[in-house]
Length: 408
Ligand code: ADP
Ligand code: ASP
Ligand code: MG
Image: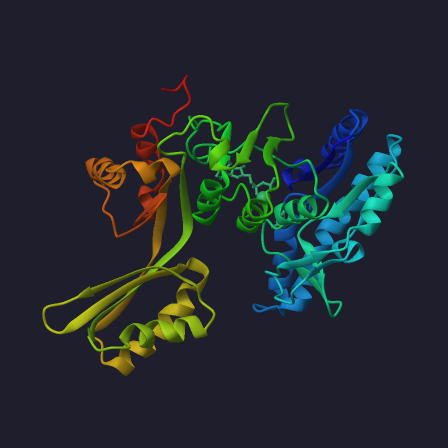
């Protein structure tokens, strides 16, 4: 008998009919001789609806209260799914994160799971029940409800799979696996049979929201066999695996992109020790995460700094930079929030030179200007104007031979 953890995202439980279809799938998995734990998201659009309600009341809802609100979305789904299972003759029991005792830290809206007490789940499984757990939520040591960040139900599923030593964690969604790039932007994108944890982590970090970053981190760390599949049709999906298990190694596995980017520049800063800290210290003190950073030294003893932040932090970061610019006597400071990041990802890059150069050549041929560049062992990222996003991703996808066979 295998123990399977399945997770169904918002679209997969978006209507009563979809919830009933999920119940059928769960019963089929159980009848095939498996123990089944299922994690569900809020019905599609529900988390955004709740966020909208909060914003109608205040521009800055308190983290604790926002978590109390947002966690209700998943609570609706677990109850409905358990009812649907019961109606179809399957014994099931629902649990909120707090009822399981998924203990997290107290970082509201982006809490991290610290431990999971899985006794009640194991008891139910022994009794032959299907266990239905609310994704995206936990409880702090002090009893406050927390949530794990957008897309956090993926992390609940992987963490439960790790705690229960499940045989597989299956993430059911509205696409039938991980693709070479977002199939909504490039229809000729190809489903990958396998992708390594490392590549998936880069893809997720660089904007491919098919899996939450922390879920991939967790799965890699605890070696949880992880698969992404469609809840709408049967198929093998994509297995996230280790590099050693990878049969065929492509040079580039995928292209990720991120629309949530903004760029800030401060020029003509006196080039003295500590200047980077003077500029970026106040940004970090304001809890703003900085991503790419470039510093250029001018011939006149001054230096220019450009860095990127999440677009939601743009206004706040620009205000801080304007203040810093005044204090440091900088020549100017400016910003641009109509930019995006496109990244090539692949473990094959480790053993091949020339990937970045080819990427630059392909983009240049389309007249796409590169605003910033950054590289690591298995990725190359460029920042470009937002209007070039689709074009850039499409030409790179084709130039690196990522298309499915029918489109190639
Ligand atoms: P769920 O609600 O099931 O968690 P998400 O919307 O979070 O679903 O994730 C699935 C979506 O991720 C797809 O609809 C797809 O548009 C997007 N996506 C982005 N990049 C990729 C990729 N490389 N492969 C597959 N899907 C991707
Ligand atoms: N409902 C939450 C969200 O929309 C969590 C999830 O779906 O994974 O982000
Ligand atoms: Mg998701």
